[in-house]
Length: 189
Image (cartoon, one colour):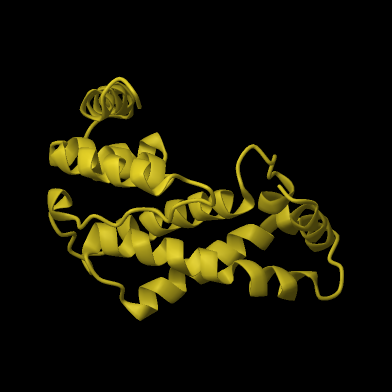
């Protein structure tokens, strides 16, 4: 976490004037993009009302209990990555809720389009292309579980619910999918 981000989070947590507005100006786009990717991946479209509902629910979650979610950020990942994981989790919960109400039909999970995460600064473009080519060769279920966990930040419970398996089955499935991906990438990766 950069010193600027650290200072911004600290100012938000204590309710400093203008801090929340600065946070929104800087990170609302991250929340919207994460919600958009999750909606596209799971239902194949981005209904504007669902997108806005997810972003608003994420923002409410961030300020709940005097900014507890922001205060609990430990800095083990980037702040953007942390916010993406929170947004994805809220998006998946929103979609499950809408599905239970009967208002939403999921498209088949193995027909989800490839939407690679943005390359991080300094990431080798050739390595990213090789990774995407290898991902294409995986069976759809392996590709999906890797995307849900690594790109969308979904937890084991969310993945289990989406795949229709027990929570205990997620870890072995992730391990197998990673092993298959490594085998496709070859020993130099």
